[in-house]
Image (cartoon, one colour):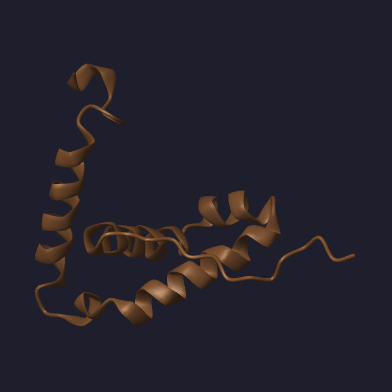
Length: 92
């Protein structure tokens, strides 16, 4: 009896979420501290690389000349939608 399912799993993100996550993953994958953390459970690299690659292939914005402005606008919209979540206590 096979209890492990090999079905694909779908995660839905808004375009803003995808853009911000793509940028964050790109920066984190080049970070030695992040690499050490992920290497504690090397299996995590598989989904991280899958998500990162899928985002890179799906987001044409990352190749546009106004990428930085688009990214910053997406970040601001997402932060606005979070309310106080993740805000340092001194900023409240």
